[in-house]
Length: 158
Image 1: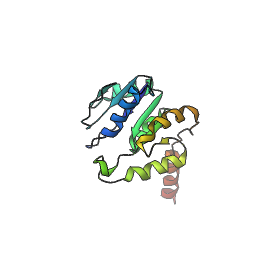
Image 2 (image 1 turned 120 degrees about the horizontal axis):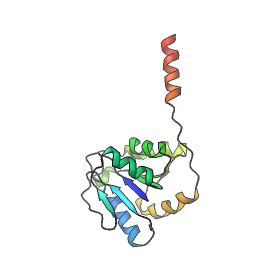
Image 3 (image 1 turned 45 degrees about the vertical axis):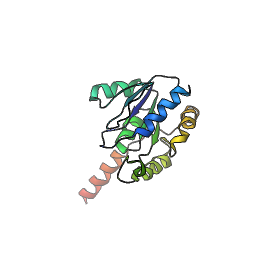
Image 4 (image 1 turned 120 degrees about the vertical axis):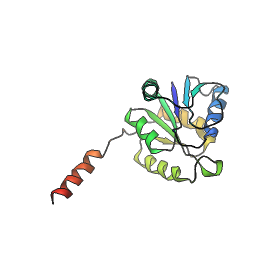
């Protein structure tokens, strides 16, 4: 199953939802799709969705997915990679009223540099990214929390 999660920001992300509908209609996406659409006002035609999910249902869908397609938000990306999922992230862009600025482009470049996700900077290439992610090996997510805590302990200890 493909799980789409668009977070809880008070901005729509209709572009990605419409593109998923199109890819299902073209038979590029053949597996089941479920989306958490947040504040988007586009209503998917070819797949199930809910505006928001409680923690339990979100976890269940994340666990049962083979691929997560998400916006370029740090929380959504980290949650998916921590769960060991392959992730395609598409940035929200200000020009489409999806955010106030284009900071998600910079975030995706950082994650891309780590090799833990497959960014999709151009929504028209999402079909290629879905095919590509099946063939590539992404790096596992390794938390640096322990390193940060050790640095803080060293600092405090001085």
